[in-house]
Image (tube, rainbow, N blue to C red; front, side, top):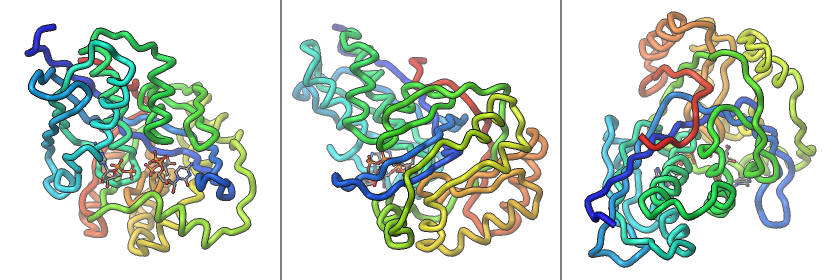
Length: 307
Ligand SMILES: C[C@@](CO)(OP(=O)(O)O)[C@H](O)COP(=O)(O)OP(=O)(O)OC[C@H]1O[C@@H](n2ccc(N)nc2=O)[C@H](O)[C@@H]1O
Ligand SMILES: Nc1ncnc2c1ncn2[C@@H]1O[C@H](COP(=O)(O)OP(=O)(O)O)[C@@H](O)[C@H]1O
């Protein structure tokens, strides 16, 4: 193998269109119905062979436009991309040590699964670098071992996750939806938000897929989709970060078709009807000073792709 070969994979963020959360299971996880939707905020993960490092170990570097987010990315073996490389190396005889560079645009600890996206991208990038020996089915299994959110960015587009969110089935979508994301100062811990959910909802029912949401997606109807968006973790995220209520209000008052916390938060997601409306809503959010920044994206977009 050529030690200078580098592979770059582009991978999208997600927003949860429906996040229905059941009671805590015996293993501590929660049964979910989790409708993932991949949006056009992308991280890039570049891997190159590092013959000076032991096979399966990684040296990490990171950059990105937002220094406060970049500073929160761990550069040790706790990084999900490094864990992905180590896991894949265990079943790849040609595995090398790797340098992994993360170019971050997905908010960190923002409820948009940036770490999971990087792990999925690292699986694809290392599998390509090391000769592509591991099947896509097996990559999806390894992804599920890394985290509940890691399989989805391998698929991209729109999919429903059941179990703890890792068992995926594609959901048909017509057309393109337009989004604005309000970024927050600081992140929220997913585990803490689920714990707050348990405190607030000790009697949670079993989660069920919202058929109205599925119909709105199939019809490409943004008005119907906006009304059907739902996130059971939103109350918990608002309880831990009450200021998010004002962010959601700004978006609603500015005409968003739907306004929700993205996953475990604290990023807030706003559905609008067109790119022009997205620009207007992003400006209203920035002017309000209720959030750190606002970014525009569209979905669905493809999953992890070698570029
Ligand atoms: C909430 C969601 C919605 O898509 O994502 P984020 O919004 O944080 O990105 C996911 O369920 C997060 O998935 P992920 O971030 O991969 O979580 P994991 O590493 O599997 O688990 C982290 C912790 O979250 C809690 N957890 C996660 C998934 C699940 N179905 N039930 C849980 O209770 C557990 O406390 C677990 O220890
Ligand atoms: N590659 C990575 N990028 C970002 N965060 C990572 C990464 N690897 C591990 N982490 C850790 O995962 C935590 C959750 O980050 P992230 O996946 O961005 O958010 P969320 O789980 O809210 O979607 C971060 O606080 C960070 O400590």
